[in-house]
Amino acid sequence: MTGRRDGLLIRSVHGAAVALALAALARTAWHGVAQPRVALAYGLLIAVGEAARRRRPTAGPGDRQTAPVGAAGALSYALLGEIGGQPTAHGAPQVVAVVLAATLAGAIGRPPARDHLARRLLTTAFAAVCFQPLHHSGALDRWPGHGPAYAFVLLLVLALTTLFDAVLAAALTLLRTGGPYGPALRDELRALAGIGTAICATGIVMALAVGVAGLWALPVFCLPLLLTQLSFHRYTAVRATYHQTIASLARSTEIAGHTPAGHARRVAALSRATGRELGLSEAGLTVLEYAALMHDIGQLSLLDPVPAGATEPLPPEQRRRIALLGGAVVRRTGVPSDVAVVVERQADPYREQPLAARIVRTVNAYEDLVGETGCGPLCALERLRLDTAREHDPQVVAALAGVLARGGGPGVPDQRQDQR
Image (cartoon, rainbow, N blue to C red; front, side, top):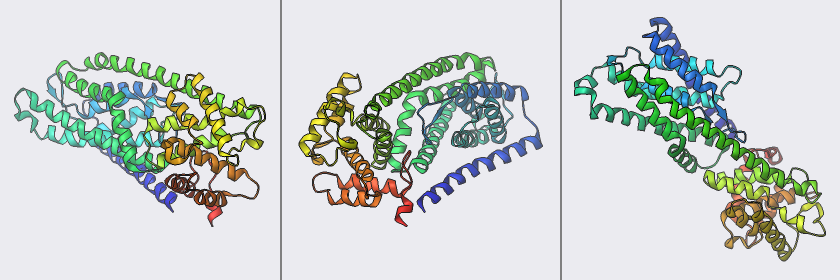
């Protein structure tokens, strides 16, 4: 029921964006395009920005796509009140129509994700509805010279728009991946300190600059953001290579025959879903994922491999020895020390472990138990619950059960059929 409800809510968001787009296109077609030269200039800017869009190679369903130039151009058009000292004539419907057409034109051959497009349209419409009626009513003209008061209105609309976008993005992420809403919203707000700040600053500065200097301000003020976007793409490429290196290193235990094929990947996927359920931040989820991928790396130092790679049935002393060996290997790879700590402490009593180590330990135990003959998902969960006095954190076990009940999390088979 939860999955169906979440799917219905996502379709409702997409439906609202489609209805908004159709209404904006119909009204613009009926009344015509006001100031077509301005609309064309902004449309080209947004299309170029969308054409330069990149999606993170390791992105999941809820991850954001980066098109800062297009986003800044859409925001600037929504907040545009003057062009070279002359008032604009377009309204909120035309803003939405131009942004939609330009986004789709720039994405030919590489259509954007529906969440990305819905956010772009709804956020742009929110900014335009907040600003354009106020501008066309003449209220802003009563403020001499459009001085500090005019800038204050733009900043206020910008703040409300960024908050609206963060709330919408967090809601879509929550519906896609599950987990509590608070950490998802917090991650979106933290993202504003990075590329989000550059997008907001460029959008509002372009709107003010075009109002004074005309359309020539668009390429001038977009150039710094374009360079920032290129740098961001290089950074994400490095991050993707780093992730692939860790994933390849984690597969070494499978290639050596110490663990079953896909074991590390399954543990990492389910650990990340469980960590999100418990409210870990994005940075914490990254550490958790890396530690889960490398949690069995210590078995490479053993003379005699553990049968089927299952460490759960081993005595505590042997599990702790394998964990310490794994931590020593991880520290030599250049991975952040937080990852090594999680790997080293996954065999300690759970009350002495950091949360990430508790999650890796419980998920790894679940995966080992499910791999045993005659022990299915429900049997494995029950055995974990019976061992919460010392070995497993009850909250982690409950979060894991919640993830499995909703469909198993990314990369994990749906377990709901076993409960019917």
